[in-house]
Every structure is written in structure tokens, then in C-alpha cells.
Length: 339
Image (tube, rainbow, N blue to C red):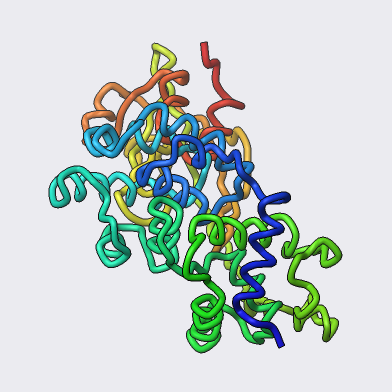
């Protein structure tokens, strides 16, 4: 039977030699930089998030700069990272901090959890990483480590299973070394106790890991029950005017690609001909697959089309500097002259 203090001490000793110490958000560590990093890492691996983090914090070096920015500029820097609600929540939370917290992030988990996009684990991670105060965390990597080490069955998305995992997280988090411990357990899940092909021989806590002892590493954590992903279809219009500008449509603020620019739907353009198909692509979302047909079309009088608030003409190079979903960016890059 493991002892919580032994688990933490072994993990910390391992991390000093094998952990990650030079991540961008560990350099010039501030609550703001930690917050931005934690939001980016909610659905994204470190290797992918790091260059986005660098560009984002160069453009918005502090909370006030982010709060005063236009959402378009925020989404443009997020373009390609996916899960765009994270960017909208960052922007909204920054403005809330400017209005209600004197331009600072709350220094306690309760205050952080009242901001858009911050849940219990993210709030605690910010407290631990930015302020070095004890705060148990439970991100995806930590769930995997604890499910295996404690032998917890069941999909972690179920409330009963999540409750058990939080209990383990509480027991194992030491009273001090909060910053190092939270980074250590995240690093263990990201680099050793990985979802596929974990390296148990390199794990500092494998001696009393129930999953290893019971030969169940491949079974834990229990996978999410499979659900059929339905397919949806949309036809987008590639419309150019005589100046070579593209007609773009801003998506509604919530929902798929909320707040981003996209090619307009063909069925929403009046007086448009059927056009010819330029390409067909499929894009995978978490809950469905989107089949996209792109048609290059002509309009009898395209000049009046961009009068609506959610429509605008942009040269391709300018469109690519805006907040675009990844598939729309790929369409523009492959079908237009960007000079």
C-alpha cells in the first residue's frame, strides 16, 4: 500500500532530473502567463501550444493589453489552435478582471472559478503554479496517472469516478512544493505515464502502481463509451470581386467557430448561381464530422452583398491574418492568389 507522502517525494525527486523546467510559461512566470498557458493546455499538447503561447504573449504581454484588444485580434492569434471558446473566454475574463478586480487576476481559486473558462482544476493549477500554494489539480494527464496508480475503474467523465480521482488528488498533494509537485505530476502523465505505450520502467512510482501490479495499464483509465459521430454537410461559397477580394462571413458569437470569419454558406446568399465545385473536405469535430463542399460562384451584383454587419470583403492575405478556422484557412490557401 502506498503512502501519500512517499508518492509525492518520489515524484518530486524524479522531476528534479527528468521533468520539464524550461517551458515558455515557466520563464518570467506571472499569474497572467500561467493563466494563458493553462487555458491553452486544456485541449492542446505542450508542443503545439508553445509557439502559440509565445506569439500570444508577445502581442498581449499582460492582462490589460488583452482586455483592451479587439476580439478579432485575439481570435486571429488563436487561429488554428481549435476550441475557440477558450480564446473568447480569455478575452471576456480579462475584461471582467479589468472591470472588477483592478486589472489583476484573483489570487484565490474561488475568485478564479467565477471567471469565464476557468474550472476547479484550472483555478487550482494557476494558484499552485503562479503562487506556489497547495492546490490539488486534476487535468487529463493527472487523471490518467491517478486512475492507474490507484486502480480506479470507470470513465473519468462520470461524476462518481471523478469524485474518487479528486479524493486521490487531495490525499497525494503535499503541503508544500506546490509549484514543483503540480508540474511533476503533469510531466509524469505527459512524458512517462502516457495514454499509449507508457514507460513503466522509467516511472518513479511504479513499484506500488496497481495498474502495473495487476497488469491493467492498458485498461486504465477506462475509455469513454464510444458514440457514433453523425455527419453534417455544408456548401460554402468562394466569392471574389473584381479586385480579387474574398467575401467572408463572421460566425455567430457562440456555437461552431463562434466569432470567427468563414466563407459564407451558399444557401444564405441571394441571387447566387450554383457555381462549380472547387474541392470537398471533411473536418472532424468532437461530436460530429462536417463534410464541406466549396463552390466558386458568380453573383450578378456582388457590390451590395457586404452591407450586412456580418459580411466583409477582404483580400486573401488579410483574410489569412484574421481569425479563421483551420479548414477555412486551408481552403483560402489552396484556392486563391495570396499576393
